[in-house]
Image (cartoon, rainbow, N blue to C red; front, side, top):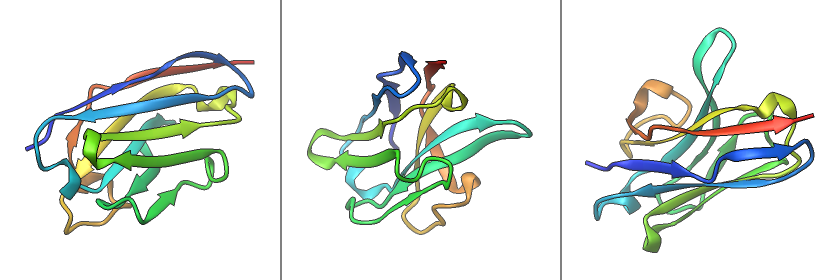
Length: 124
């Protein structure tokens, strides 16, 4: 089991940056691939970015590719989402999630553990 808590959200002007953190409890964090999600029109949550358990493989939604960077520090039991060149349409609650290693990074239902979310607001 792993418990997740996000932090680092806030209010930022368009073009600015924020770094979200996802702190995990437990000693098994390094075995979990991680992802970041946010709500989207017509969906409960949409995929933003994912990272493998070792950190060597990453995936991004087209809408954030080139602007967001997902990373992790397994020694600190923490995953990160660096968000640059923020746009008003990035405004959302951002959730981090962990999934079973034997699962598909693109399938939201494969993520078993979720944090409560952190609010990001981008003003124009």
